[in-house]
Image 1: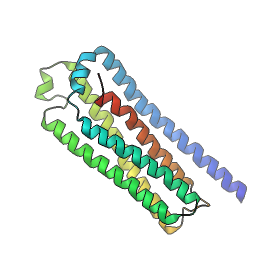
Image 2: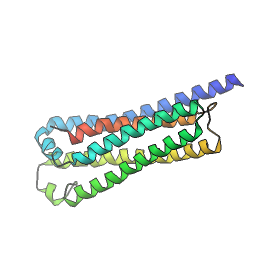
Image 3: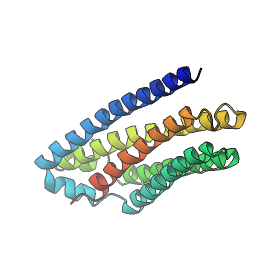
Image 4: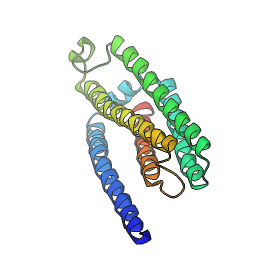
Length: 200
């Protein structure tokens, strides 16, 4: 029985790492595309980057780093059998993620309202590099936002399983894997932030 559980645990860990690797390839491709266009249009990217809302970007960076800390702490808490603490930490992680998405909604709304979007009249007559910057920005942050939303759904399911007792100190691989996924979401944003908000 113990040997079977060890095999299932090893299989689950291998599965999540393979999945995370495909996610790294996906975003890695977008980052390579960004680097290619940046080398071709450095001046236009710098001008477009100055239109970004650094306050929103910084706040969202802090939110995701904090949420990742909460997710890591929830794994430690379940190992110690502190179920109430696990639920509180997962709840805090989800709240941080939701605030992140609300911030992103207001940020996008502001940018679109000021005409910063692909094929807008502002960019149609201007340098192509600025339009490319914002095309990549919306594609990358939109895809990342989808992953944040998926993470919220996953962590909610995990929290319900913790509450029902299906996840506990003796079996917490789903929580651990969910936390790993959330760390990846956080890590991807750590790359997005300087590329788009701090571009020189």
